[in-house]
Amino acid sequence: MDLQAPLPDKARVVDALRERLRAELEAVERVAAMGRDEATSSESRAEGPYDTRATEASYLARGQALRVAQLRQQLAWFDVFDPRQPLAPRVVQVGALVGLDGPRRQLVFVAPVGGGRATVDGREVQVISPSSPLGAAMGELEDGDAFEVDSPRGVVEYEIIGII
Image (cartoon, rainbow, N blue to C red; front, side, top):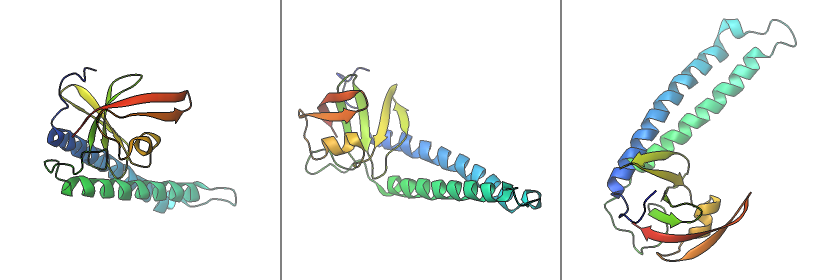
């Protein structure tokens, strides 16, 4: 990835992430509805003391409902976030698009809840949270600062090469 070019427009990044979340929410809502139907279906009733289909289906439906709630909460944040508002101060914080140089160059967007990726102008942007190992290590750092992250492969060194 060429991060020598300027960071992509943050508004376009946020739009791409918002659309990815909407698509994921729509898909998970469909699956959750199927799980709910399965959990309440007469065909899922136990036919004996060791038949746990209904219980398993209800656990799955609950997990899917929780994921729907998480996605709705994340999408609600993206819907009210204004990427045109400048960060004050310009440090790594929620709402920052950050260019990193490390084992590979990468772009990360710091959101209240992490997870997911989007491609903008041919460049992949990963969503991280401040509580993720990467987010925690670079919280409150500035452009040009270096930091380390403990990973399963050992200590990884990064440098912040842009924040918007």
